[in-house]
Amino acid sequence: MADGDNINDIIDHKLFTEEDIHNMCVRLGKELTKDYACKKPIVVGALKGAVYFLTDLTRQMDVAHQLDFIDVSSYGDGFESSGKIKVITDLSADVKDRDVLIVEDIVDTGLTMKYMKDMIHERGANSVKCCALLNKEARRSKDVTVDYYGSKVGDEFVVGYGLDFLNMYRNLQYIGVLKSEVIQKYVNK
Ligand SMILES: O=P(O)(O)OC[C@H]1O[C@H](OP(=O)(O)OP(=O)(O)O)[C@H](O)[C@@H]1O
Ligand code: HPA
Ligand SMILES: [Mg+2]
Image (tube, rainbow, N blue to C red):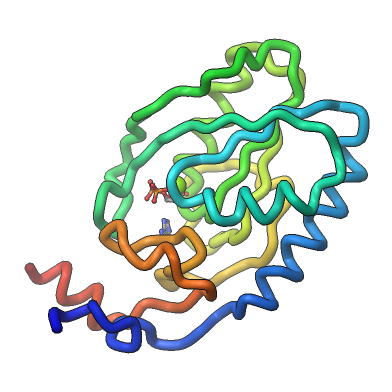
């Protein structure tokens, strides 16, 4: 078996269980239900990382809304942001005068979220807010407000529930911290 094929080879420890994640979705869903009542927001999932969170979160939101997606990337297959955002697939909805909620798996440096918020503001949205499952504040380099989040995390690389390393491990049902030697191996390649 190749290195990394076995999940136990790459995870240092579990950070959030399935139950922890479910509880975060329920709490955030309740808050968003209250704050977006009668607003018919456009809920934008940021591909690919947000997919798992988006589907669970929106099913906890008891408000009529429309779904859209944007595919932006700055990490490529790696774990270090390139510092440049690439829009791979743009939104399909017209956001002018609409209330927009961007859903993300994680806000790390803040570069991706700031880019998306600014872009949607510039297109004339009535409001632009975001909801991230995880908020890695310690690594923030761009000043961006994370309006709603499930939990703060420290400066560790996390995988699972949408979060990837080398575009893998998104399908883990829990969120775990990647072993530092896995990252070192990649860096030293
Ligand atoms: O705050 P930042 O430093 O910008 O990092 C956060 C972003 O990085 C990851 O996406 P990535 O670009 O790796 O693409 P992916 O969602 O397809 O994994 C993650 O899903 C966020 O979108
Ligand atoms: O900790 C992380 N894990 C996975 N993807 C990420 N993108 C930014 N930070 C992370
Ligand atoms: Mg992403």
